[in-house]
Image (cartoon, rainbow, N blue to C red; front, side):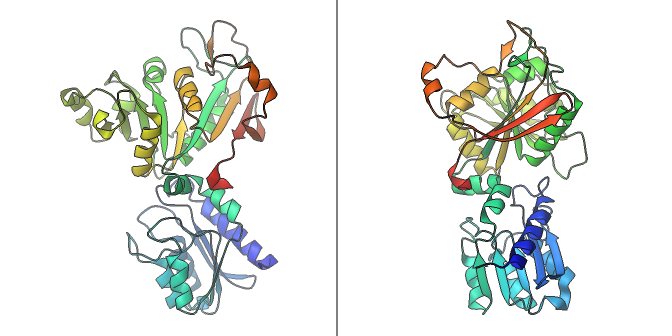
Length: 371
């Protein structure tokens, strides 16, 4: 159904959409190319929520040359008034005669209405071109809309013998500078970084992006059931990144020293996280707050809890050639499972990279939104 030219133009649109991977959240990453055959007359991508969408940038560049052209968009054009006017209306007014979308928008405000609006105006519409690539690019947005929870990436760093820290908690540095810089990029792509109170007390992490300039910092989410986060810890004192503390403490007087800082918010028991922090419910709450891609940077206990709850979609393991020995801390803490040797692997290796002396190993499991 699609020509080689169509494929090339959509590949160009996807490359443009990737340029927004550090900044568009909570909006999807979208690119647009306007072309007459192989001649591109306009192109653009969505940079940041509240700013013009990809179609608007491309149409501005194309000007009068948009008339009679084909618009290739990685996501169905919007049909409603939000922070910006509907892109479907702008495409109609531009005079394009054909619109090809990689995927339809699952957002109930759109959900086929954009393509329907274009078709009613006499514009030829098609969808499904490079659909898998477009869904992969927007896995966080799609997970938030379709599954009502973020896409969860668990990041770990371990020694050659699978240890994450010495027995006293010391872990700086297991991996080298190249691996740590790579983590900075993953943080920048994420909507939020989640950790536990144990990691805060032991490592006092900043959990923000420092290696390069970014238009937005990810939200820091701290699971702290007894509200023990020190007021002088980086997640509290560093206001460059917003912080969300999840606690079971129901005493709002104890919340006040934290809430006095504008960049801090608290999720308490009243938001239905139960008598313990319910990870499933927590992910739903985070999705409702616009978080689509969640990165976990935690210790053995929290890593194990998320895996046991079957809530991890991707694992990224940075492995160093160092050997820490016993009784150093482990990556995970599971009971022995002899039956696992006879089963198919739960995880699929997607990529292995060499980062100086370290290895980066990316694993995923099949999930419905990426099928």
